[in-house]
Structures are given as C-alpha cells and as structure tokens.
Length: 148
Ligand code: DQA
Image (cartoon, rainbow, N blue to C red; front, side, top):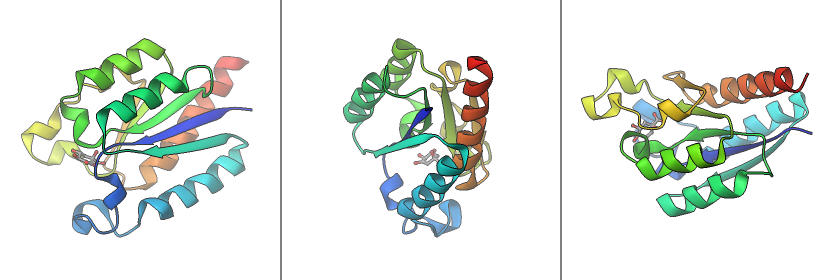
C-alpha cells in the first residue's frame, strides 16, 4: 500500500486564524480531515506532521525514507531560505511535491524564491487548501505509474 507523508512547516498550525484573507478560514484539522478522505478514496496511507521547528521537519524527512513513498510539503516561510530542508530532501531522494496555499508569486518579492523547488518534482501554488488534494492525487498517480 502506498504511504505518503504530509508535512507542514511553521505557522500552518494557525490556519483558519492566521490572515484568513490570504490563507482562508479552514483550520489545518479541517484540511487534514478532507485529505484523509481523499487518501482513503485512493487507497493510500497518510501521515501528517506539522512543526514550527526546522530540525523537527528535517528529522521527519529523514525518517520518511523507507516508511513513506513520497512527501507533500508546505515548508511555510522556510521555503524561501532553508538550505537545510533542501539538503534533507536531496538526501532521502523521495519524490516531494511542494504546496503553497497562497500565490507566492503575486506576493512580496522574498516569497518569489523557493530553495526547495529544485529538489521537488513539482509545485502547486495559489489554489488555496485544495492544493494539498491535487498534490496527493498527483503523487499517487506518479507513484502508481512508476511501479507498473
Ligand atoms: C505559504 C507561503 C509562505 O510564503 C508563507 O511563509 C507561509 C505559507 C503558503 O502556503 O502560501 O507560511 O507556504
């Protein structure tokens, strides 16, 4: 059975309360409940980890090796400067889809750079919290194709 890790970085625990005009009114629990239904529909396992700490996210990426087949990752603001997270992804060589709820390209210039993008297989940006669902579907499709 396919198994995916959904990883959320700093401040994403504040979804629903945090800048709702940018990030919407759903909580992270709402988003994850929806995602679990999608995973069930697709017949895959899903683990979710949210942390505000870079080292915890790095450990989670390392520990995903051999346990999960791919990662859906919203690194929050770490996206824009965490070479350590980028190196962690490169180290495990698991397929990662980077997700951003907001359209980072339509926001402040510092959000236009992702140091994660070069080690991700793709990005889903600006589609709101639905982006997580598209990422799970895309990752499952890709992993199923690769295993044929
Ligand atoms: C974000 C975009 C980042 O720039 C920001 O720091 C976040 C959330 C998004 O999902 O749109 O924390 O990753």
